[in-house]
Picture 1: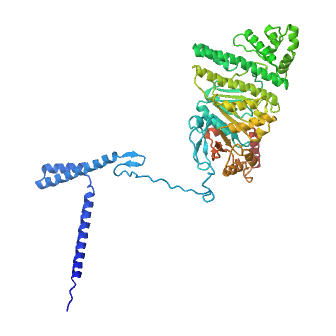
Picture 2 (picture 1 turned 90 degrees about the horizontal axis):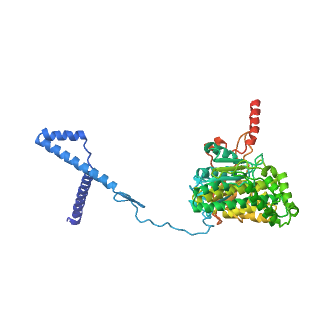
Picture 3 (picture 1 turned 60 degrees about the vertical axis):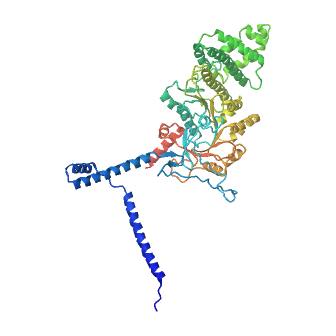
Length: 594
């Protein structure tokens, strides 16, 4: 007997139905996709042909032509609508807002992990700084990332707000590019309108730069002053402050008149202080007494009354007037007679005579050969003509140069405050600072004062020396303690190639990471000794520096100085010109051997 299984029949029927439905769904999906595809737009020629067919063709032809034209018009409308829709998308922080814009939804916060430096060694502390600021003068590129690095103390204070006062201390062994780094800063600041004062170019390292600038802007705007090779500077010269008195008098305003009175009083005090300092330097240990200062002031006032307009007295005139029976001068000694005055004033007159006839006379007993121009863009005072062994004379020259130089900065500020001139900023360069500090005559205290007041004076300070040992080898223990504070007060410390012992000396002042110490000490290594004769292979650390700010121990910015082609062609950074003859002789020998 046959057993019926109706469920199997129902299952077969169900499978057939499902297959038919899937076929219908696929057909419907294909039909929808074909409908979604936009038809191709007709060209102008095709539309013209269809338009003509509507006018001349049969009724069926006209119907088909009308249908094609209607479909093309609809497709064109859809195309214009999609374009208009894409143009209305709004841009925000997460993408384009609108259909098809791809705007992101909620942004999930990054997952934070916390672990000890033992487990995540290398992540913290950062071994080197990866930042590369683009505010300031372009000095080179980042040593590790290759990004351009821009830096100058003024821009980092006024624009970037990285530091609080514009001062920099540069350390590095000789021949590794310290002066080149400074010259790049000077060039950038010159074109930014900052006046540069090199008040004591020792070698000189900046004269070539001043000469090239002079070719562009003229001798009035780029000034080179030579002292020691026939060049003289008069301590009784009224100096740069006297240059602004006519401008203040011509202004005619109450503020300008008050400023002019202040300037005249300042001129008298400056001249008296310069002369007294030179006399103290000549006399030695014995101090200049207060009544002698009073006699000098009376003598200078008497000379000013006798001089014609535009004339400046010299030290010989001061000596002559002290030999006279002038009541005002005699009153400083409270002498009852001229004979008593001659007896009491003999030490002062003897010191002035020694100043004139001694080693200082050739530099200071005469009219200033080249007065500092207040309106100059760069002033380079070349003191390389003063012998390096004559420390006392070099100190006296530097002291008077600084007096005149800072008088020029004050003259510009007073002129601007009175509304008679533009506001200006200045950059003072103290290269070969070990010579400046060892010159004595209070130069350490003068530099210390400058590091404390440079922000109020609107002055950028660039201090350069070879090692920290230069600051610790001063003869006076008090000067040593003062000099140590120069690095501490510098807003930026730039360090080039140094030996490991110098890094240890700076440990209490500037904190370096182990990677930075390894880099700096490796830069002082010599180049490979297997090169060919005459090959100009630079040392590994030439032009490499680390820019450090703050005392928190944060990594600095390692930078490689990059010279522009114009800098290389001009030779502005070539300080080995004395050895050019040796290279020429070597080339001649090689040609002879060949």
